[in-house]
Image (cartoon, rainbow, N blue to C red; front, side, top):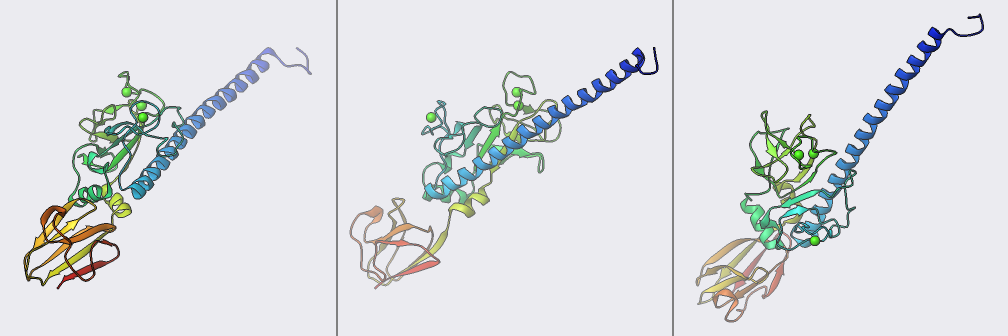
Length: 282
Ligand SMILES: [Ca+2]
Ligand SMILES: [Ca+2]
Ligand SMILES: [Ca+2]
C-alpha cells in the first residue's frame, strides 16, 4: 500500500456502495415501469368507457361483445372481449392483452328498449362490488376489465378473484359478481364500469305527450318507432304518456297500428322532440 493508491478494503467498500446504488436504481426503475403500465391501462379503460357511452349515445344501444377475437361485435354475445374495432379503439391495454367486456342484455337493441329498461331499472348481469362502497353487488350498464399484469391469485386465469375480506367478487366470469378492488398480493385486475343513471342522462330524453279525444269513437295512440300501442282513449277522454324524444306517434282508429289515422291537431304521424306535446282529436 502507498499514499496514492487504494487499499483493497477501500476498493471493496466503494464497490459495495456502487452495488447498493445500482440495485436501488434497478428496483426504482422496476417500480416506475409497473406504475407506468398500470396508469396507461387505467387510461385505456377510461377511454373505452367514453367510447362505449358515445356509441350508446349515437346508436341507442351498447355494442355486443367480441367473442372471436376480430375486434368486431358479435350479435347476441353479452360477454367477451371489448369490440375495439367497432369502437375505433386500440386493440389492447398496456399489457398487450384485449380487455374483458360485459353488457346488460336489455341495453343492446335500440334506444326505445334501452331507455325503457333504464327508466324501469335494470337487474342481472353484469353486477359489481366496488371496494370504495357497499359490500353488496349492484347491476351496472356495462363493465370493462383489464387482467392487470399477472394471474395474481394463481388460479390459471389472468383475471382474479377476491375471496376474503368485506368486499368480494370474481373477475374470471363475474359470478356472482365482478370486483373493483385496489391491488393486493392475490389481485391485480383493473376495472371500470358505467352506471345506469349516468347512461340514462347521456342517451335518454323523455317528454310528456298528452292526447285529448273529443271525437265520438275510441282512438289508439300508437308508437310507430317501437311498434306498440301506448294506450287507447275512449270518446271524451284523455291520456298522458312518457315517451322518448325522437319517437314517431300516430293516432289511429284501431289498435296495433291497424285501421286509419284519425284527424288531429297537430296531425299525425308526428316525430316528437323537445319539452312535450298535446294532440287534440276534434
Ligand atoms: Ca367478433
Ligand atoms: Ca390479474
Ligand atoms: Ca387469476
